[in-house]
Image (cartoon, rainbow, N blue to C red; front, side, top):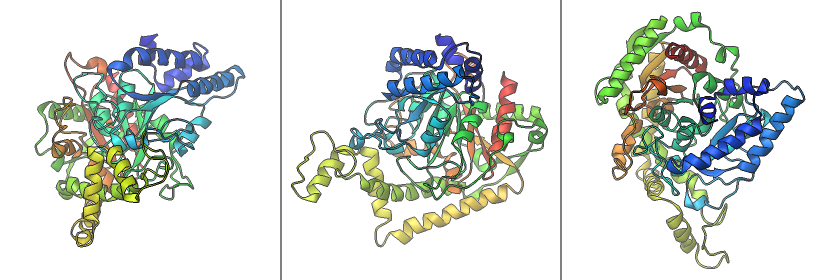
Length: 489
């Protein structure tokens, strides 16, 4: 059964369920057995939702028994990042300040997946409030990379990526603000899609940086990413930033002839140094494979890329300081042991709740954000960062006049060791140097393993390559990725 669960994809699960080779309830129960047996050494999950999963699986099985036309996601066991609300279940964002909070409603993406009869196995670990690149910043536990338990799975969606890579879920939802889907996907050897900003509703996602946060899929295959993305995409009246983008059949059934017509740009700034030798080698391998498909390559330039990291770490803390102000010990859930009688000064309550509730990285960003937004510093920092953000977006516009998609590394290195960067925030921030510019411009991008897990040599770590596309053109990225993947199988 373990081999079956490890190899199941959304597509193969759907085929097996429709053919009645197994029931959704049997598979869900089998996943819980393996999670309880193996997750202690990985730490992917914070909360298991067994009752919810059982109800969802039974509904899927009933639809099959009645002969209903089931969709691609009926009965599919999914993991959900703990920043995404599931009604009636804990939603902590891996922070002590929300340790006792229970979601009052479903995020829009969860509501859509419920309509598809998907099954939710549990909530996955993450960096607190999505602040981090290693999942070491969780207030509850450290998640380990299934490929090498001494290494991080990436972050902030490290629990979701680890769950999929370890065979503890068929697919998962994560969120990406600066690289939090793509970087852990690269480190764990799975596929991670960051959609165009506005393609997927943020309603019910605990906000970190509202102008960049985006929910997306983490899956075993590119095809699975397309299936899950199409199910959650679309305009939502509860999120004014969403757009009515239409994703047709080309998302699920790419045309090789059209994919061969794509021109792939190679930004010189992403290959000019600072990349680990194994990453550089794997980029050459990916480029060679795509050339064998018939895709043409062209050099392009993104000259303001070098300012991306600085721009991001001014804009993000500014929004963090605003978004996290709501967690004040009065609304949502109180910390255990906090005063509940309402007596005492407001400042005392804040010191008690926020001082004990937020971890070091959250405090660091709140303080930085308050500083850059303060009188006398707003123009020098925040306003200037927004202007640079516009220049970075213009660089991409110019590059896309010459190319249809861009190829870059996802991260400068493979997964690093647990504790290696924990005491050096600047070193940790550099893990996202290749993923951040995409977010500043609001573009779609996908991380795809350069080779499948079975092809990795003993001791070899996964490496992902990143495809970046024009707004609303996820089909180009997923199409190229699908045919790349077929070359590997």
